[in-house]
Image 1 (cartoon, rainbow, N blue to C red):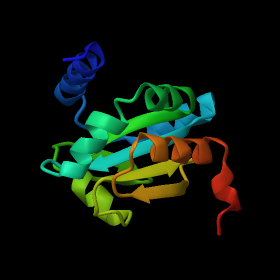
Image 2 (image 1 turned 45 degrees about the vertical axis):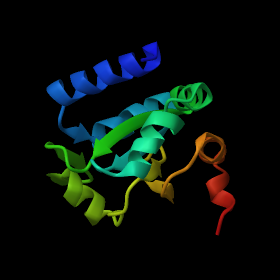
Image 3 (image 1 turned 120 degrees about the vertical axis):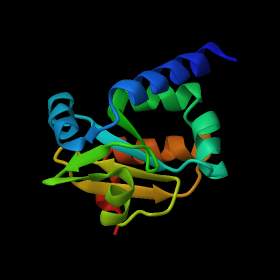
Image 4 (image 1 turned 180 degrees about the vertical axis):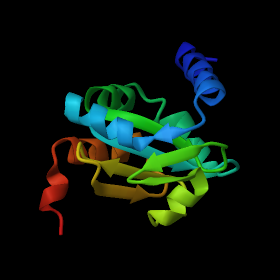
Length: 146
């Protein structure tokens, strides 16, 4: 097992143990302070494409560096316990995904520093394609897309 994977596993266990709830409203405040986008990774247990993104795409050194530089990363397994707080809603993780219109997994949602959903990608993306997405979002090129 690689050291990166071990650290990621430990951090995941710690986050599951201590923080089942996700407060996107607080993350929007942090995004404003840091001038970053928020990247929400929605996935579900038992999904092979979700697992592939976790084990390959999000384990890539270039992807990790790009996320750390320009994004606040939020990992939401919609089957996990806990609530999501966002824009006066406090609902289950699964209901959050359904309420915002993304009940398909894996899905990556990109919010700007004001909490506006500015871009999304539904489905698996390999490292190269996902790096292009990260660049598109971090450069705000989504403003040029109709």
